[in-house]
Amino acid sequence: MEFVSLPFAAGLVVVFVLYYLFPNRRWQRALLLMASAAFIGYNSLVHLAFAVGITLFSFYAGRLLARKINRRSAPFILWGSIALLIAVWIAARYAVGVFPLGISFYTFQALAYLIEIYWEEEPENSLPDFALYMLLFMKFLSGPIERADQLLPQIKKARMFNYEQTVRGLMTLAGGAFMKLMIADRIAPSLDGVFVDVHNATSMQLLQVTMLYPIQLYADFAGYTLMAIGIGQMFGFRLSPNFNRPFTSQSTTELWRRWHMSLSFWVRDYVFTPLSASLRQHGVWGIRLSLLVTFIVIGVWHGAGIAFAAYGLFQGLLVVFEQATARQHEWFQKKAPKIYAPLMTIRTYVLFALSLLFFRLENTREVFYVYSHLFDGFTTGIKELKLGLTDFYWIVFGIAVVLMFAAEWAESQHSLIDRLRRANPLVRWAAYFVFATILFAFGAFGVENFIYTQF
Amino acid sequence: MTKEEILQQLNDIFRRVLNNKLTLTYDMSAKDVDGWDSMTNLMLIGEIEKHYDIHFKMREIVKLANVGELCDTILKKIA
Image 1 (cartoon, one colour):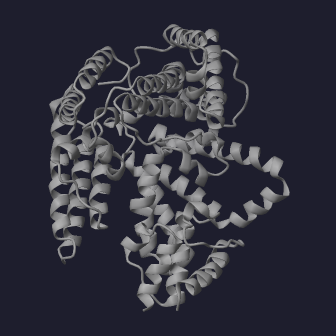
Image 2 (tube, rainbow over the protein chains, first blue to last red; image 1 turned 90 degrees about the vertical axis):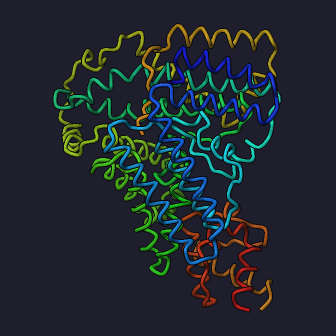
Image 3 (cartoon, each protein chain N blue to C red; image 1 turned 90 degrees about the horizontal axis):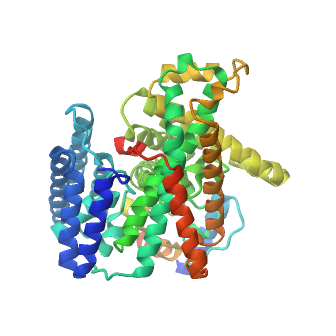
């Protein structure tokens, strides 16, 4: 089920009302579990069967691991469980034919949970609480990938209706819908039209879609995440942030602290740190090797094949380069701070855009074709650059992108929602009305798919 | 060796690895120190292990909360 759909909106309202009708923990937990099961099993019960199976397995494996923690069998239980979870994940993705929705996200939650128990954290004793941690519907499809010690304590409390919190949740949800409907879905068909057949595109078109794709992907995925966080807020949960103005980054290293943060922090804590710790006698080369492996893991988490590995390797090589030239970067920054910041921000964006071609085209030969034809010539007429979108919608798209970045900048200075909540009621309601009107008038409804639900 | 002496020695190691002129206190953690991130952390751990001829367990590396706990762990290991 998609967030931007009528069944979801209707279901959300019903569950929301029932949820606060009886604000007691057992009821709320049972309701959320039922709602999550319906959400996951809506299209196919196979999705639900996979999710429940992995949940049960992780719960009991965690308890077994905790009981044997100081015995010699502990590492075998841990590694056996990890191997099994990864094997199921790979098999489900590539062998079974139906790809179970959300599996990459909840498998990573399960892995983190078991590794933490191995590091002597307490396992969860309540199966229903643990199941909700794994299956909670608003973060099920595409994250954020939550940590047990963040989400489980929240699940254990009853939540009373809170008007302020609900309004804030709705505003966050609306912000996400804006990014999705006004930007990502508006431009998606035009970019898809070029990506589907790069050999028939002009050089200018290739350059154009390459540079626009990060914006589409960002508006799509960060928009989805904001919607998930907003819905979570409405139900009294604080989910993890996933993006923090990634395109302001002045290095690829910084970008990965701001882009898909719940994934990048996950690989930092459960891949990079253990790996670099075990290679620490090799000094800086151990760390560099760990970085490369970690980013390749990020790549192949998105899909099998050389192209996804290349996407990760591309990032890894950039981060290693930045690590190796940290002093030169520092020197340059001190010498020319005014040139350094914009230059490095643009450099980071362009390199990210180029790397995303591996991710988008999923075929290294096509990527190299695009690379070698980006600067063939600038002879394209203005008509080709419209990519099938009318002048009017290019303007709407452009304004929406500017508004998105401006709102994010303003948010980084001072909470926009706070400011709006303190405004005069007339101004506030006028703002809600205008925002909703714009969204319904100019949003691209009916596309209904998020890029990250395929992972 | 006292905890105070360990803090002093750690200060030298941190200054050398991170290449800056910081002054460590017990309640400092990675987020308070410029340049102390997931990458330099392992270089620091490696240098500390060499200096005291000790070995940290994986759990200790991932769970150490601040400089004070790091000093305590080192004290325990060299005792």
